[in-house]
Image 1 (cartoon, rainbow, N blue to C red):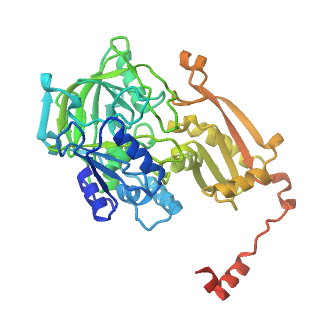
Image 2: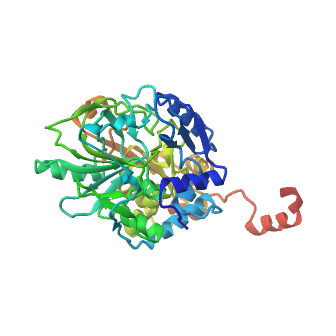
Image 3: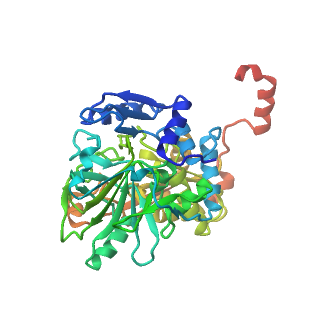
Length: 480
């Protein structure tokens, strides 16, 4: 059951469980980021809370790595801690299938309004914003945040996590990969010659941050989904300048406007991304001009700095990406899907689907559909693998066994060309990058037993279920 109304309650719950490491005296300039990187490589490192940061008042804090291990992640999503990784995926799959929106409720004020900075008092560098990686083009406040935009045609509100560079005290970068909801929305405003209203929140209750990273379908507001998870509406304050909803319990929020690129852009990047590279380089990108800053007393920035794989910066159990694939395949009417998992950096780029084959071409059909339908941040992925239903797709050793013993490269590997990728893709050629041609190919690998002679395929060398259970019962002391 989800039980948090703000980031502070979540941090207190982590501390009570002995799962929060507090660090005093770190430097915002690379030291915080490197500590996060080293901790993420341990895989079981605690979430971190930095205070007494060099050059900033005590109480101006940075929380980081909050969702990098399973227990804090489950806590942040309201998922029972005792569930296994795959049962966690199934729990969230069931949750999303039963979704019923609970829209946010407007309130007159909230903790985020304890301090308001406008006009000549605006200074985003009032906060200890880290420079996370050595080759980053500057300080990035947008690594664990939510950007709030409204579609000018349909009126619904989107929350998304995008990277946000600090250019100066009242100007932020607004980098969004092509195809993302905020990118589509802002382009509608710009096509009309209008500035795009934007709210950015840097420190919010965990479910709002978590859902901001999910590939939720167009037209579904993360506010409504968060209300559903909470079992009650998220409280929001209507922004004075943008009219957009601001989470009332946020730590730091800004209202601003993003002018059309023809009016103003700034050089953005590079930034060390979740793929493990500074792939998008440095390029001119849109900006947000800050109109107002609101913050709580002793504010906390939520930071989720990307790290080189196999380090994990968020969601070690891929509830969002797995279910995106699974739901897409089921909505397409494909049968026999038994399990889905995502491997690769941040569990985003290599779907593996186990299927009970029921007809000729079934496995290839599933793989092709997954390659086309699974987009979002995973556009950079180039491989989709389909395995039989006796293979656990979450177990990479089993997947490799199937790949090396059931796949005939001549007949079981297909290439699909011209699919969307992202500027974060390290394999995007320089000439295509310069032209804005963000397309790539994907490989679909059928690692299933050939359906046309499946009954003649050699049997698997493993003791039967009954024999295994009998031996385990008789020789239990050997396996405890």
